[in-house]
Length: 422
Ligand code: UD1
Ligand code: CA
Image 1: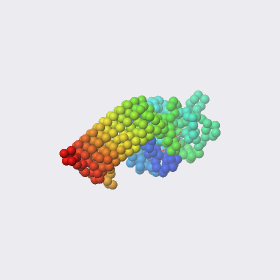
Image 2: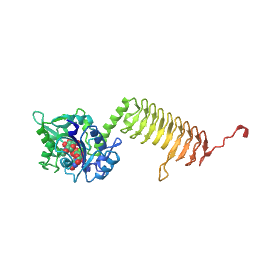
Image 3: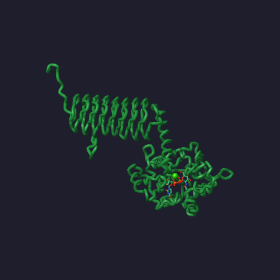
Image 4: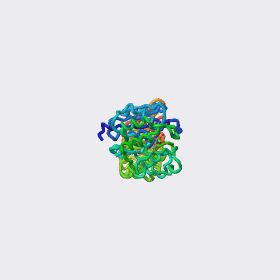
């Protein structure tokens, strides 16, 4: 089917009640990105004529603000006035969609869904429903099949009797449906169910029966994990985290203890780099080859380590560029800083980057030696090969020239005595 006839619809109009935080589920963090971002990014991999996101009135504002900030302006927003169910959410979007074509519908709370799976569903001529066999089907809609294995129905958890509750094949909440058929079917839906909602599942079954759609069953069930509660979020994060680590391990990155490494999505690490236990590497961090990180290091966004750089225990970095073989091995805060190649940042060094109003930058030259316990009050520059004595407090603007030596509080150039002075 040509992309010009495919329309993508993501449902995120629910009230997020089961999350219990009061905030929108869509914006919960999963490995450094909002839950919804994972879904939108997967859906963006598919060519399509239009992309629409359904939002509810409760959480519309923060989600729209995020969409704009994240540059996801390609998504049109349809507003669902109140959360009356997944079919009602679809109905809120129908006015934005054409009469004919195919619609791929996804839930905004299934962050692990892959673009490959979505493509496969869209390619099925008569439409498709995605299912999986899971050990614990709690919370998902159960798939009813007829004698020939065809789709007979989907029953929600709340509407299950004991026998149906035991069914382990569940609905992933992803459907490729004929738009014309869907338009006709949704108008006739009832709310005669335990939750009094308009169920998209009922509509999907009817449409797929009519168009002779297929049931596609996932081999790896994890991909369809739905996040309804914070416990679900923790489960999905664990799966995603393991995926991220596999990626780095296969690229030649050494993890002493993969189980204690928190590496967010979108981190680059070069081969031969060793990450010791209990490190947190945030989204966007870039680490070269042959570096050493941790144990207990926190590398925040904007951190770039050139090849062979070393960041040790209890070092926090943010907007920090460390040159080749630069070292900060112990107990430091390095924020808004450029550290030259082979510079040594001594134990306990702090870049005082914030004056209460604004952030300022520190520049440390190549091969500079920053003594233990130095405080660098930004903005300030330490020249190449310069040195600060232990405990020095280098005040803002009091740049240390190339090869210079400063000591004290506030730091002043150190008089160098010659043997002839004695
Ligand atoms: C839904 C399916 C279930 C499936 C599961 C997969 C229905 C009736 N049930 O259940 O069969 O196994 O997903 O994860 O569809 N939403 C709206 N407006 C609403 C209600 C929900 O936009 O009025 C959105 C939610 O924000 C969410 C998605 O639709 O992103 C699914 O809603 P949710 O309430 O989480 O459905 P489940 O109970 O998980
Ligand atoms: Ca859900």
